Image (cartoon, rainbow, N blue to C red; front, side, top):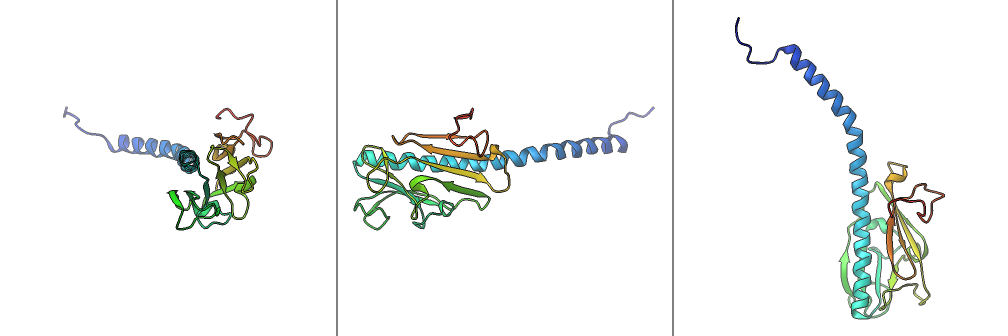
Length: 187
């Protein structure tokens, strides 16, 4: 009897069929993971900008601002963080640029409350690291980032900034009733 050194056509076809079946089961999970990862990346970049502007404002004992790149209320266009040297509450040539972000994916929607929703939108830190409005009053704000191509709460991030300037991020358990993420387990 001759020695068999390979696979039969039937064995190869069964193996390929099983591989195709397993890959179709894994693909949706991979897509959801990629979407979640992209959203988390944008949220982390935004938080890094908040920390940078707050830190620089405190280090220099000056006002620091984070605002949309076009100085409007569209955070999706990207954002700039700067020390407001001339106290104009807008970015100009005399100010110190801390960091600048590119526009986010068109699949991500950014919505906000408080001063982050004004036109122009802004986050204003004084030299003590407290978040304020342009008149010096304490401010609190929430920025929500959500995937447009997925309505699940898993693809939503909320960045909540307290009046003290403290930043936290969460994934809400429910989009409409869990507004402060108090029911969230990922705070």
